[in-house]
Length: 340
Image (cartoon, rainbow, N blue to C red; front, top):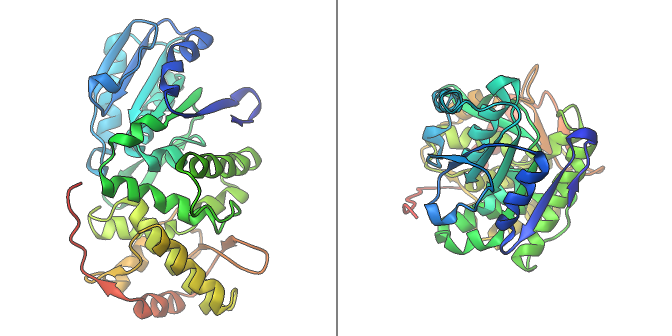
């Protein structure tokens, strides 16, 4: 499918084996050389068709930092990378984010192609041009917009995912039901990916720079990002967004925006994807609210994307007391996640 953004338009390729189209995409760009930043084994890296410097990276929030971006830019400089070359990312969402930001900053912008290898990155993180890294104070606080030249969502990569990482990707798919993608439960995985990417492409095409409609993509993310930070990323992104989606339904109900049946639907959808629905046992409510105030949508107070009579929309200045009451009423559990 195409993300139609004028001279920044690009194609998203979805399906088994699409990674082997990388060399053709590099040739269309006219790139003379490439830097491939990969968090995956060498056999996962397709040929670029041009001389390529391979840099090893690591997926995971601990490496999603300004230090990582700075080191990547230094390696680009040491290789002599120019604006006529290309950067290629191979990995999960943290890799595509950090590599995308490095590409955006180096020489004020070098073309980048993403090969997302996790379900989470394929349905969301690699599409739309948002790049960001974390600060100790919060998630995704430093970033910019830099649209890729192409994205290859090769579903063969997903066969290698550990069970937890595969389920983690459904966090973004689950929230799509409440932002206009329809009910994707029970569909084949490639159809779920296509529907999720298609909805995101529609939104990004209408609002590239997050001035209005694109806020919908943050459904469940305000609490989700806070939960990631509060648990030191023991909760993964999709898991945290899933809990945030359940909370968004509860908060919309508390504000009188939706009825009990729709609130219950949020919980049911998240449960049906096998995702967590409860707050961590040790979560401090005041601390979580402080983290949510750092959300990029917040300007004068707490802001959430919430369901309502006109569908999902950004709701600003939500009373902190209402947020606290909804958090206090949510069930809790102790999470002991395996490494894989």
